[in-house]
Image (tube, rainbow, N blue to C red; front, side):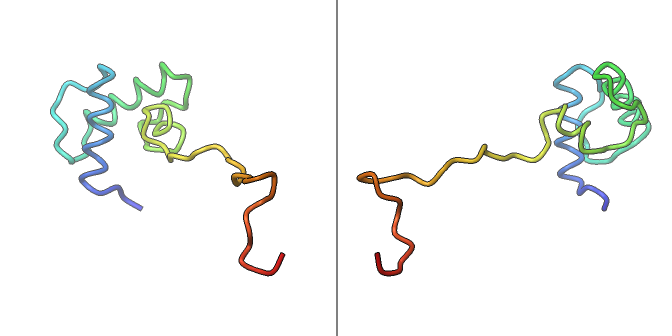
Amino acid sequence: MTPTPERYKEIQQALIDKGYLQAPASGVWGPDCSQALKKFQQEQNLTPNGKLDALSLISLGLGPSWEPYRPTAVVNNRPPSSGGLN
């Protein structure tokens, strides 16, 4: 699946912010973007292929966001009601 122009802009901006890309974030992925990504990947000890992958996006700070598991709150030393009879 090809990223949207908005996603390309986010990736380009991350590369700009980290000093790897000198061009403005246009939303169009070209050879300069691939070269910037390759250099970033190499310096992050990732496979320097210039292709957008999960590890590269995570390293750029653009990977999936998730919160660690948080147990359900316990009130008055009892678990929350499941809606059934207790």
